[in-house]
Length: 338
Image (cartoon, rainbow, N blue to C red):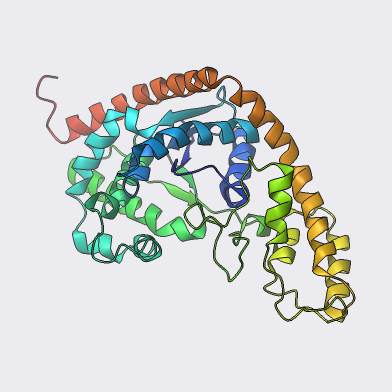
């Protein structure tokens, strides 16, 4: 199949600027290179691991995530967009991979540990959530992806998938492809903090994000709430740039680095108010989001057409997954009827 790239998102809410700088922008750029066969998975089964009591939320957000994909430039003609729950081969692969991973290994996964802490599960961790790294390995291997774009916080998940592939191939023969993580080195692709600051990443569950679908009024209101320097009480006071969320966003999104440098110098010596800096950030972000917002609104006028895109992509992905599953069954000697 050549170079194959797999990535995806949980449909637990609309996508936000953290997703945009962390993955979406990069996905579009990789798609444009033409070097990869690209698959993007809407991971609704994974979303149900901690939203199982609210399946309607997950269902509704499948369409919302698809709208975000199309709005930022994911092209169904060049990227196969598919729905996890409608691919039965993934569940079967997960069952086979479960035998290759110990509970102790799952409990040591740093990404899982941090998410369990963030979600305050305590001792009540759903088994489905605990084993989702194994499900993720099935997601990656169904199309024999050799490239998986991820943030640094997801590297432990890719390493666990690599271990599963190595163990499977050692026991049953070379069938699966060991994936390589692709971590963006661009400083502007770093983790984006939420609008409340305190180094908390932008998160759907924490409701501290700026969403791709936010209109101008909502965007301005959220920027007004953003964390700056609590010691900068008067315009004349010298302010701190480090740890100031507004300047963190300007570093990522503003194209005029010289102007941002000037604002920083002025802010640090005093005489520049938070309101003016926030208004400039609004201008920068509104210019970025306006075309995305407009495209999203156009696609949203015809949800049936969007669902048709997902149906076609899922069908294509199922064909690929069926071939991989056939090879896996043969290698495991459970292809009883040929």
